[in-house]
Length: 261
Image 1: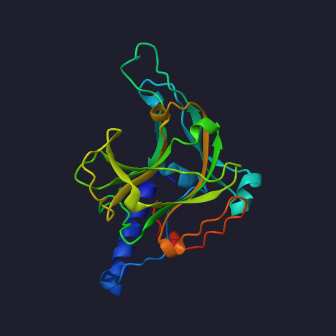
Image 2 (image 1 turned 180 degrees about the horizontal axis):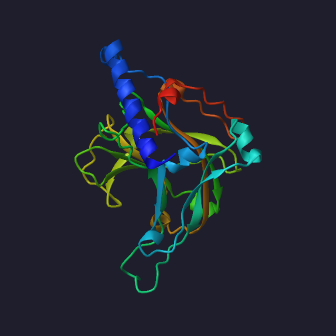
């Protein structure tokens, strides 16, 4: 799908949603607490909604890729034909002449801006307690402790980034659900922890992504992370599956019909 087609599709969907809310006076209703899917990684169009970056873009030597992976042996356990795969080489060195001027060891991805005629699409997560990620960790074990979830809001300081480390429980190349409380994210700016920790502006989430910060931990090597979906849920929806047990299927939710890329 071309960029123009995506733009027109998003604009049309926002118009229909707003018209529907007016007709049903939905604005006066209680905001739903039902689980909601924000992003999926199950086809080419899904993957195209994300931007990648790494220190290699500015003089480092790391690499980054976000591809569609179609391996039945790993995907059939969650009922998917295809999932996303975030991978590359995490390297701490920099190109000649940049020693001491640049810090290497970074790679990440996040959803692209979603412009429409009515402004950018953003997500309201204020009525949900957790960010839920369905992921599968692989790659060099040395890299597995340096992954972070990142959230950018439409707050007053555009360089603010809210971060939380990802704590994996399974290391056998199998899928797991990570549930991260929104209240546990910390505010950072330009890669540093902000002294002033204010509450996240959860009514307007601009982007969600995952990064690998090998430079912070001194971790290098091949990294690999499978990712199936990004959702928002509440405590009553959290199911913590013990290692070795099969994950429950993700139920279809209303947002899957309304989701706009």
